[in-house]
Structures are given as structure tokens and as C-alpha cells.
Length: 367
Image (cartoon, rainbow, N blue to C red):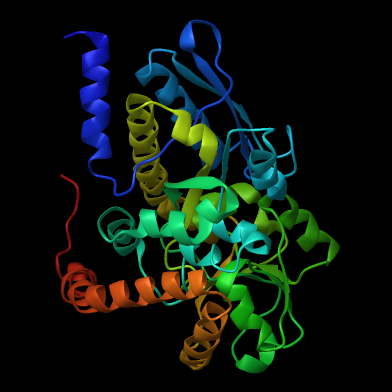
């Protein structure tokens, strides 16, 4: 089969699983080839740096070199939280980060990342690819900023966070200096928490200096690599604030629209594949990392108290709708997520929820 026919068919097949296609472009090079610059909010080392590199390599291979991407990880070209500025200014054609990093640019964009007590990872992907989520994210958040959105990774359910001291009651949240971006941070503010937003690369130093008393990050695999256990010993779960978190790839809208259909399909396919790869790698690594944190670094793993989770959940049901009313776009995204959540809750509990609670009934051993 001819290379172009094969690439086109395979890319389109992958893209058909993704609702709402799109892509990018940049200055044309010789023989009609294009080269983009991508900037990331994440460092080169670790899973998320590797994910961007893998994505760019796949695009170059599938396009036969018609589209190549040069990656600049956090701090290499711009600061982590300046990635979107770089794309909007034309310095880069693509950015990679998490939607809640760009809250200052949009009242609605943080809803794309996740919603406390909202969708789990399977439900999020269902919303994106089969619930109109990608198209709605474009319409309500990214297109108004001159950008095109594609999900390109998911952390899955995160951990609740790291604390210097034990946290058992609502009173323990007051005055706490805590790093938590997104809607979860907005909820904590109402309990008197001093919420601070920092890129991941700055969190350990902030903990060490005492600038913050605690932080959420991602989960055991990423947290182990970040060395947070060196400063904080109390590790809480569950991650009520981020039951799953979409990582966003975003593209200069004009560059995206200038791509031909084949290149759009290739970018779409590569982003969807990276979305699956990131989640799968976190899932594969998390338990081993958790055991190291507990057994080798003496981390105190503990659940949030029922009292605390109940209070936070009740507050979330008040605070999040208020935040959603800041703009019509935020309201539209919020309503879409809540409506989709309503269609998911019963089936997810009947299937995954009940199975997970019963799985321990069978005690298998290797043979």
C-alpha cells in the first residue's frame, strides 16, 4: 500500500474516534513542509515531557516529514505559565499544559480541566469524544482566545495532597498556605485557606522554604519523582478536587485551519493516542511508586475524614455554580458537565463502583 494512502487511512480511522477534529500549521518550508514550535508548561524530565516528545515524533513520522514539531519544555523558551501567551503571540504554534493554568485568560477554561466531585477519567474521555466536549471546549473557551483544543493526556484520579501537619477538620484548613490550582482551590479559599498557584517545577522549593504548607500535585508516580516526601510526610486521599484531569494541547487557530485534512487527522490521531498513553503510564506506575513512598520513605498515607469530605462536597455544590455564572461560556460548560455526570453516575456505580468493592473476594496468586 502506498505510504500516503496508508497514513491517510490510519490517521482518519483514529480521528473518527475523536469528536471535533482540528490541527495546526506554521511557516511553510521547502517542498510544502511545515515546522512548528511547541512550548510546554511541563519540564523535559518525567512522563509529561516524554509525552510531548512522543506526540511530536508521531506527527513527524505519520506525516512523512510534512509536519515536524520542535519542542521547548518549561523554561527552555518561555516560563511554564507563559506557554499560552507564546502561542497567542505567534512565537509558537502549539502549547501543552493543563486548562486551569490559563484561568487568568478565561472564566470558562478551568471547567475543561476537571470539576471537583465531577467526572472520572473514563467519563471525561466519554464526554470529550462522544459527548461533544471537544467542540464545546473550543466554542466556549479556546476559540475565543484564537486557539484550537485537543485533549492530550489525563492524570486519572489524583491524590488529595501533601501536608506538613495532619488535616482532620475544616478548622485545619484555615490559614493554611496550600498550592492547588483550578476549581478546587476556589473551594478551599472559602474555608480561609491561602491558595497559591505554582508550576510543578517550583513546588518543592516553595515547600522547603516554608512559602507553602502543603500542595497537591498529581499522584504517586509523579509525586515520588518530584521529591515532595522530603518535606511533607502526610499524604492524603482521595483527590476530591481532581477526580481526573485533562491535559490540553492547544494550537494557533489560524495555523490549525491552514492545515489540510490529512495533517489535521494526523495531529488529531497523535493527540488521542498520547491521551491514552499518558493515562496508561500513570496507571502502570502509581502503585509501585506508592509502595516506595510508604515503605522506603515512611510517608503517612491517610484518608481525609468523612467530616472534612462532607463539608468540602457541600461547599463545592455552592461555590462551583457561582463560578460558572461568571460568563455564558462558563455556564454552558458547567451545564454540559453536570448533565453528562447525571447520565454517568448510576452506570458507573453499578459497574465499576460495585466491581471494585467486590474484587477482593477473589484472592489470586501467581503460579
